Length: 318
Image 1 (cartoon, rainbow, N blue to C red):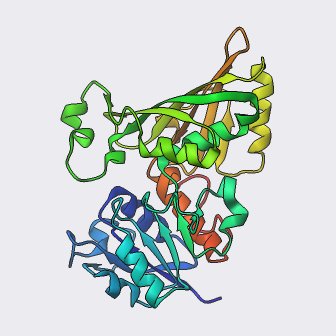
Image 2 (cartoon, helix red, strand yellow; image 1 turned 180 degrees about the vertical axis):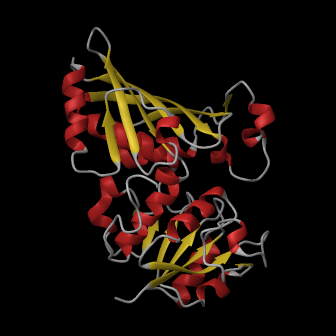
């Protein structure tokens, strides 16, 4: 079988580094080029030591990226920056796969929404895939199996490590600002709130916070039940939904951001029901740079390119 090549556009951020690390172990995908305006000319191994020593960061215009002979492109760009690259690739290499890590195409019906547990069949051999948001992944996987049992919006309290705020300096990724506290932000209308509402067809009220640890996130979810239910009944529904899903773990205890750190899996647990049987609460946790971004991107690339979904991924990092 012919090896496949991809271009990574915008690799300066934390997720770009995780992608390079995972791709260095992929048996079928190799990295053809890596772009970063800020790191132009520097060896890629300075940021991702596992990478091919021949790779150097390049500062390429959209048309120059599209002209490269690769089978797939991963766009790891800020929100709002993907349009010229997509247009250039559409014009020059329309058959190539694009996986966009930004929010730019998560509401675009022309793109497949890249959550394998929910959209696996629709992702096979699709050439345009929008990777889901990290918080949105945790919320959807926890909430969806219980939709038949709940009514009204789910209320979600989220906490993430400061890697989720990117590399551009801000109070949300400044350890001095975050020391001994959590910082709430985007108290209404967070993009992941709209993303989950759009995907599930059910409202969510989401309040995110950033905390003084680097990676990982957890969401605490509370929802009213449409009828009185026991915790056992709801836990069975969760377990049955994810039976056979290798990267979703339904657990009894409350998972934490530390539980999920450096792991490919999403953890859902701590499910509890109020004494009157009218309200359910649970927690989901994942590594925002892996299960919330890079691991899912690799799975989406595999599905789009016709490879087994978990090629290059193992449930546990060595």
